[in-house]
Image (tube, rainbow, N blue to C red; front, side, top):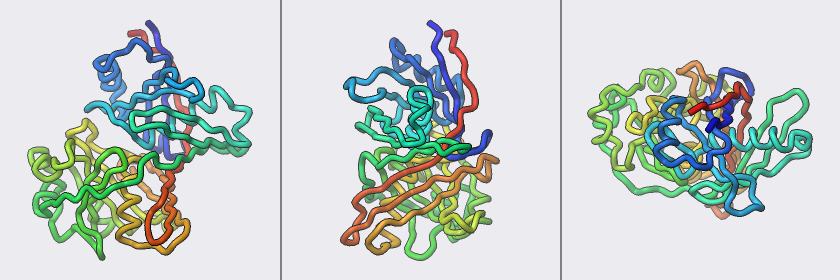
Length: 303
């Protein structure tokens, strides 16, 4: 049966930047194999399948797939789908803000969507699960070799290689500067699993304090070749996990702090993710992910 779909660029207010997302509406009747096949047909980092919610007080139920399989939670699908549903169902209310309640595998995610006149819609949500340090050890020689870097390129200050998850695990790889992170690549796929496989599919989130835009705070890249993503232009779930690292290593004072993470610049898809940390008693008690999205296309799947 034909199914309607939309594509959006997420974590940007400009078309053909940010992270592309496909959203398939009316996905009832599709099994896991069909969803994975459609995801691979779109060949984007993530595709969302929308169905009626289990609880009618909520907006929709989501399934999120990468070309490598299903995810329980992801940031750019959450932001993009919430903005799409808000624009389709409550466009006239966006000036005052609309709450979109999404049932994801990780649990219920409430997303606030707003749009100022003449601007792209913007959404933000509180993490459904606080990040945790997975307590894994990594060999810098293997990690550097997999990325085409030298072990001396990795780490700065108190930042070393670690693994964190706020629903989806990532290996966090600190890199000393912008010039070095620009050289990173999937240099040896055969080294990927030995280097990063302790977290499953081995998604690597590289970051440095040097940024291309002086108004931003962190420059990042994300590689997940074993998950079907050679490189991702913007990774909200990685930033969600990064919130735990930032709070633990940087130890910001109590209060609210915002970091703007830039990603995708090496791919020609510049993206900006807003991360808000709420610190109390020296601990992270909540974190919020925010960003814009813009609709690009719509159509019908004929099979």
